[in-house]
Each structure stands twice: as C-alpha cells, then as structure tokens.
Length: 338
Ligand SMILES: [Zn+2]
Ligand SMILES: [Zn+2]
Picture 1 (tube, protein in one colour):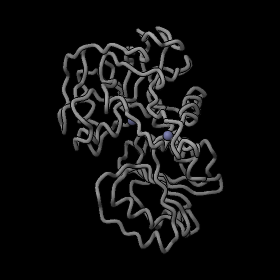
Picture 2 (spheres, rainbow, N blue to C red):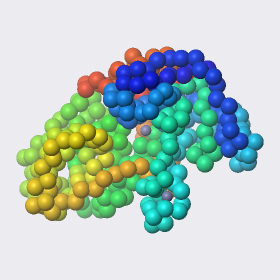
Picture 3 (tube, rainbow, N blue to C red):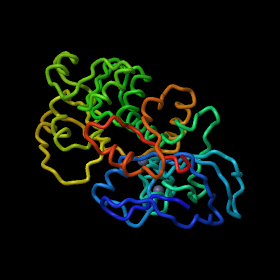
C-alpha cells in the first residue's frame, strides 16, 4: 500500500509498504482523511519522532477488517482514533486526571505506523465512533478540540473574565470558538498571520490584533490586563511577553508546546502573583464533548480545515506549505485515495 514514510529530520517520502495485518485486538481501517498535526510539523523540522514511522494520528476512517477478539466493532463502522487511553491505576488516574496518566501514551503515527497511508491498524481501545451527522471533512479534529476543551476547563475561566488567545492555528481557533460559545464577554485574539486573523474575525472576537499591543489590551481591560492568556504559539518571546498583558493574579494557560530551553524572566510573573498552567492532552469526557460540539455544529471546523490534499503531495502541499510563516493553511487533511 501507499504510505508517507518518515525517516528523520526533513526526510519524508512516499513509499510502497506492506498493508498492516490487524492483531486479534485490532481493526484494519481504510483511511478517509488524516490531518497534519503541529507535532508532525515539529518532528519534520527537528527530527523529534523515532524512525522510521508512518506519521499521522488525526485519523478518520472506516473499518474493513476486524481482529479475532473484536466484538464491539464491525466492518463499515466510521471511526476516529483517540490516543488518550490511560492505565486506570496510577496516582493521576486514581485522582481522575487520566490525561496525565503515568503510563505514557504510545501514540500511533509516532511509535507505530499511523494514518498517512491507505490503511492503518488500530487497537480497539483507541476507537471512537463518529456519528453520521458529522461530515468527513469535520471528522479528524476531535483531538485538538478536546485539548482546547481541557485547557478551558482546567483554567477555571468564567463568563465575567477577560481572555487573550495568542496564536490562531487550529488550537487557538478552537479555543476562541469555545470561549465564545461559553459566553466569555471580553475576548481578544492575536496572530501575526493576517489570513488566520481574518478567519478568527468571522467568530466576532471583541478585539483582533496582529501583534501584542499593550495599550489596546490595557484599554480593553480597564488598564489592569487580562484575567487569562491562552498561549498557543509556544514561542519563547511570546511566552515572556505574556506577563505584560496579564492582570495581577491572572493566569497564563500554556497550550503551545515549547521543547527547547530558553531564557525566561520569572520576575514579572512572581511579582504579579500569576499562575502558569501547563496543558496536555484530554480526558475521554473531553473527547466525547468535542464530538458532541461538532455534531451539534456549536464548534465549526469548516473554516479551520483549509485544504484536502492527495497523499502524493504531502510534502509539497502539506508540510512545506504549513511551515511557511505566512501560510494560508490552518488544518490540512491528507486523502490517500485522491
Ligand atoms: Zn495531533
Ligand atoms: Zn494511569
């Protein structure tokens, strides 16, 4: 079968590899679409993932074969993949924080061949049914939306609070849409990419800016600064600057991933008694809610999915395009049969 094989930093190419054979607790899935994730891009740039592997974990597909022990799934079921399956026994799981399970997730597309291929084998415990009311185009983004739901839930934000969302990729866009749905009254968004800002503006944030503007944010928050900053870029300079737009006692919700050491000035955060909250993954409940919000059209991925490309074009129209700073793309889906 056709697959995109990742073999290290900037090494991604189309290859012919054997079609996977499902184990007794797995199903074979014919891929409909697989989304290109920010972490895939990061890995392409830096060589993060172990190699070789077929990347792709944001998978929508239909079951074409079931392993011997499979009872709850049948051929033809349309499914998505949920990596966040916890052990149920560790301290985190006992406390209900199953998304930060000590038994780390061994995700498809990183540790095992994933969805940038015609077929993928998936363990039944990671399968989630996708309701018929959700179109294929909207069926790969639940993981990111679930992360956004978790971040907002963990932040403890209320309607009366003000929030700034920095970085309007898939995650930032969904956080903005979700905060809007929850009725947050003072919602500000920032992205230097005008294409992304234009898409965000369609959801009527109170303020949309191309850069962090202290006077504008102070002006919108009676000079005090925002209650919450949802930082979705992972950019060190932005993380450092976020202290300047937070109110005293406000919270930095760090959703963007930063995996390199950098100079961080803690002093403003200390003096202003700010909370810095890391965000990782989601619980099964967040994932369920993500599917429900898309099914009920409360969250709309239509404008977030900006392109669907053939697997053959994954490097040129996918990875190259998405990495450009002025890209018009937000979420790109790969169709192995296009
Ligand atoms: Zn992802
Ligand atoms: Zn656990």
